[in-house]
Each structure stands twice: as structure tokens, then as C-alpha cells.
Amino acid sequence: MSRPFTPSPNIVRLKESATLAVAARARALRAQGIPVIDLGAGEPDFDTPAFIRQAAAAAVEAGATRYTATEGIPPLRDAIAAEANRWLPAGATPFSASEVVVSNGSKQSLYNACVALFGPGDEVLVPTPSWTSYYEMLELARTTAVPVFGQAANGLKVTADELERAATPRTRGLMLNSPCNPTGAVYSRHELEEILALADRHGWWVISDEIYRRIAYDGEALSLSQLDAPRDRLVLINGVAKAYAMTGWRIGWSIAPVALSKAMTAVQSHATSNPAAVSQHAALAALTRLDESDAAVKTMVAAFHARRDAVLDALGALAPRAVHPAGAFYLYLDVSSVGGDDPGAAFAAALLDRYQVAVVPGSGFYTPGWIRASYATAQATAVEGVQRIVRLLTEGL
Ligand SMILES: Cc1ncc(COP(=O)(O)O)c(C=O)c1O
Image (cartoon, rainbow, N blue to C red; front, side, top):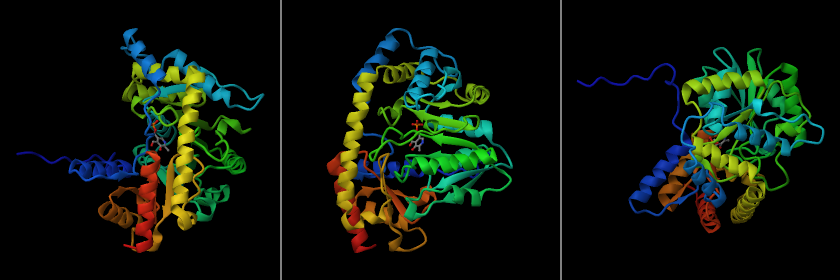
């Protein structure tokens, strides 16, 4: 007799990732021979630049096949600190390698931070819509995620006032993500300063997910490190996945006060140990061979920029229904006009059915009136997909 699996209390409220679910459905249709335009993906469509791949191959041949220190190899931690220091304003205190913990992707760094900082009874503010994993990580840390909804008129970004209204005496921190997944919105210097001042007044931790920082189109997207603010409650999260088209290598990092970095290292040491040695060497090449990597980033961002402009063009008169995508590679579109309890899910299902275009329903980001379309795909494909979205939105469900 086979006994059923009963989920533990740790995971009983955990949800499947909405983005992965859509990708799986699109793959299933493709497997049946149905051509699908996949605007569901959350990863660059480019190959990892050749010099990085070659550096990794050379590192394997040179013996990068063993365990490393949990927090990463020293030259990579140095390179990550140096990379963060490249963008600091003149006179700012530089970061040091002792504040850096390298992980298996920025996702793990975010998880390390949530588990090390928060626990039962704590509340953490999550500007919403937001990347779905923040909620689930906080759930795994047995912490209450408190959604704070931004206004459409403000690109769905939250203001310091909105955060303050959602706070309680149990609030311990907030998650920030600029450029934002799923909206592509970028917070201005003034908006960030106000939020940081609020957090500082309350002693909240700010976890700043800056994974899309280099993918910005209307001027620079700021790192919180570039603002003149105390760092004793600040966790910067970044990685190589998006800027260098290195999603599969799984390298991310946190930059945080040394005591917290040690705690996060301890968490990681018991969960996964070090990130793959070969991947650390690949990331080292990306972060130290700056002429080559800056050129590669520039080329990829220019392509994303051209696609961003092209998909906005394709939206035509419907463009005001989208959040202005100033960064990342997502178009977030208001489809609430189709009506029902979950307009985004109904729209996404009809779109896949009738027009073979995969997008992610906004319910995955706690905003069911919306859909997310990724333009991390060939420009003609992205434009064709958005034209079909316009067709369905115009004709209705
Ligand atoms: C906002 C955001 N943060 C973090 C990640 C995870 O990135 P990584 O591949 O570095 O774990 C993603 C990936 O989709 C993301 O969209």
C-alpha cells in the first residue's frame, strides 16, 4: 500500500511559481507541434558571451572542480566589491569583499537574507506587483509578507507614504526591486531617497533586489548604494543572470553588513554550500574583463531597448494601458477591461488558445487585472506577439 505525501507546515502554503507554470504549458503545446510565441520567459534570449564561456572551460581544465569556500572564492568576492564600487559617487566608502557572499543565484541570496533577518511574528512590506518569489521566501522564513499596492498612475510603484500606511509595530523590513519585475518600472532618485529615509526612521531592513539594474533605457537605474544613506540596514542583491545572459550558471550575491553576511554564509553552508566552482570562474571573467563585458552588456541592452520601443509601437493606442517599461524586459499591461474575477488569467488562457501567445497572468504577481509579456525574444517575435495581444484585447474574450 502506498502512503500519501502530506506536506509539512513549512510548505503547506507555498505556491508554484507562476512564471514556471506558463513556461511549462507553452513547452507542452510546442511538444504537440503547435508553434507558440513565448512571451512568458524571464531570461535573456542571448547566449552567454564567448569570452565568459571560454574562461569557464579554461577554469575547469585548470582544476576548478572542487568545493570552494561557502561564501565564494576570494578573487570573485573582490571583483564583486570592485564592481559595486564602480558605480559609487565620489567620496563614498567603498565596499569590501568581507561584505560579499556569493550564492547560487540572486534568488538564493534573497532567500538567505529573508531567513537570516526575519522570523515568526515579523512583517515585511512587499511593494506589489512584485516578483512572486518574495512572498514564498518570506513564507519559508515563517514571516508575514504585507503587500503594498502601487497606483497605476505611478507606474504601480509604491511611495514612502503608502509604505508608511501599511506599516505596523511588527514591520521589520521591506523588499525593493528597481527596475521591477513584472512592471519594468524604475524608481527615481527622489522616490528611493524618500523610501530609504522612511526605512531609516523606523530601523527597517531594506533588501534591494538590483538584478535588472544594468538593463535600463531612460537613463541609469540607481542602486541604493548610490544614494547617500546609512548602510547598516541595507542588503544589496545582484547577480550575473540578467545583465550578462548567464541565467543557467547560477551566480548571485549579497552585499551586506559583515555580521549579517556571516549569518547568511552559515545559512547557505547548511543548505547548498558554495556555488559551482566553474560558475564562479565564469562570473569572475564577467566582472574583471570589463572591456569585453561592458561591450557585451551594451550590445544586449541596445537590443532590448530597440525591442522595448518596437513593442510600445505595436501597442499603439493601447500603450497608456501599460506601465512605462523603463528597465528590465517586461511589458505589464492592464487587461481588466475583459472583466471577471481574474481577468489576467482569463486573458492569458484565451491568448494561448486562440493566438498561441504565452504570457504570464498578473495574478502571479498579486495583481489579477494585468498580464506580463516578456520581450526577451527576437524583436519580430515580440512585436508579432504584442500585435496578437492587441487583437484579442480589441475583440474581447
Ligand atoms: C526580480 C528578480 N529577482 C531575482 C531573480 C532571480 O535571479 P537569479 O537567476 O540570479 O537567481 C529574478 C529572476 O527572474 C527576478 O526577476
